[in-house]
Length: 282
Image (cartoon, rainbow, N blue to C red):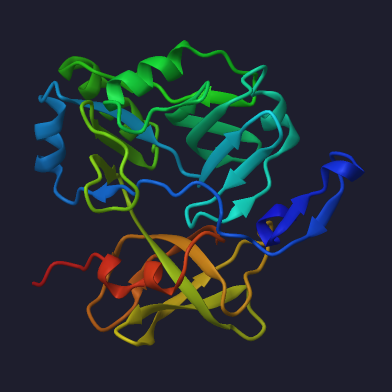
């Protein structure tokens, strides 16, 4: 919780000590994921043996860059963030490694290997980076995401994840190299339900709910309210939050929104109106 608010572990004071520091944008810059909106486009990738399939974890993007002197964590925006000690310990004896992953709680789910033993791997095909990643051994707080390669295995993974009510899947081109940003990315995500990043514009008086807004041009437009459960920390005005919803009404609100979690790795442009999916016109 402290690391979410911008605190970073002060190693000189012990693993449980935190200090407030400015988030420096000197961490690893990541490859972003393209969005698949049509099921038919995903199904084409299932039968195409140049693509593999993985689960889309419902966490925060996290990179880890370790050398002999230090361990540095990074978020989606390339800002330095803390890494839980359990994850740092689970890197074992890998002394020169750079990883791309998602973090959920104190578990790091790896899906890419960017550097190992002094060699930058970004220009290698994803298949080779993944093979090397799967050959490495990590401790209990680090897991490599499972990958399906054949049509039968990809279809089974898709079916199993839908039945388990997972967030979605990611299809990746096995010959793709690692390019920073969204343009040129060869990774594609398909979500089983709709989600959006929105900004908290106000708090509802005497209720555990907040008003949501999205960037529409240069200004923010409100898109309704969402309830915050009693066991969840109340967001503040100006915070970015992730919500799940059924669909959006054009010129109106999100229908049946559910609060998921706070976002600390996004900006106004990530909360744009263009991300919304609307109810089909009658």
